[in-house]
Length: 186
Image 1 (cartoon, rainbow, N blue to C red):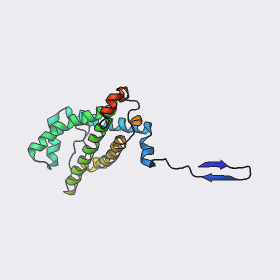
Image 2 (tube, rainbow, N blue to C red; image 1 turned 120 degrees about the horizontal axis):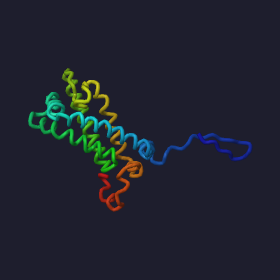
Image 3 (cartoon, rainbow, N blue to C red; image 1 turned 180 degrees about the vertical axis):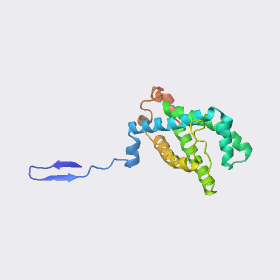
Image 4 (cartoon, one colour; image 1 turned 120 degrees about the vertical axis):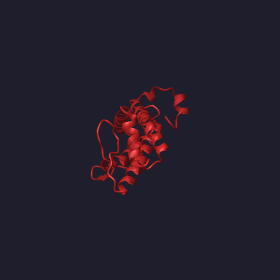
């Protein structure tokens, strides 16, 4: 609330005006919030990647097989590639390098995980989703609630202005010409 005094006799109280570009722009412009979201998502995906890379066959490939959604050859490929994509996205978010691309990867993976878990739960099956591999066993029925908030956090990072996205990151040290060239992914 703002208090305005026009003269000594009258004081008017008016609500603070909304930000010029709406609440989404107001939130994404908050560099502290974007930094917290980057570090939080980076921690989740780095932990997940580490848990699968300990024994990729057991904790990643077998986990994808357990979902029984993809054909065997495709499931094996996804099981082998997924921990490395999680690692790259986590590092990108942590260090602020290619943050838009990393956030897009996190959003797409989280959405795919949500859909896969939804299919499994709709079939009435209860399986270990393998989200964190060797670190901790997790049920799909529990971790499904993490996926949509992670999609939202990743989207907020993607649409954050450069000043917010690259505050406290290695990305801010890149020359301006390279930042302009890599604008969509950076």
